[in-house]
Image: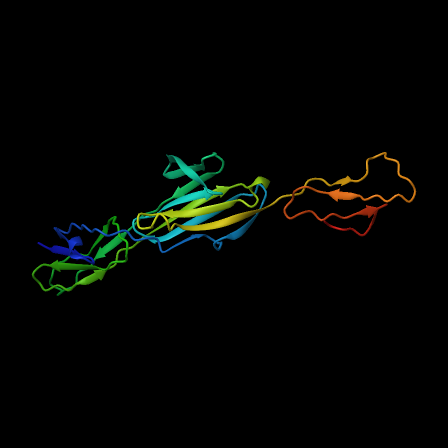
Length: 252
């Protein structure tokens, strides 16, 4: 009979397994990083009005896998249903949809070395575990043949979440926050990444103040004409023309 023992940092986590059955317990490990792919923290994301935009949040190297939470101007999106293997989320005021995909795969190879005449299998195991730090595992395999020992390091999880948006002019200056939720993170020290949208949209049509169509003016009378255009990102450039020719202008 082959006996395998797995040792982590402290003896109370040592588990003895027989007949090649692997049982491993780890403490939770917090994520090493969080990012919205392609953007630094607090970056401005420039996008045209009604253009599709996908924000991809990546939370790396945690155990167990971290949960990703999205916020729009500090309002949290909520999970509402699970459809076809994907979490479908929407904000509490039910605007944009969120698709979250979580992939978890851990492979551990138990490898045994010894004399060529030993009949010892090399097997691949797939398992789930929880840890807070990267612990090395010490695997002892005994078949009364003085076998050697190999150290195996458990893998960690990387979680990704895609937030799909179609911003309008009203979303200009809107902040989107990706936050990691994990049992190894202190509630008062959240791990998050933030971006702010800069939505490009056209200004409203220009209009002139200071004169009413049909109004009579006296010769030599001073009149101040003000051209206005509301909204627009970036703001509109206003150009004056007199009888088809461009004239000097002043901005306020």
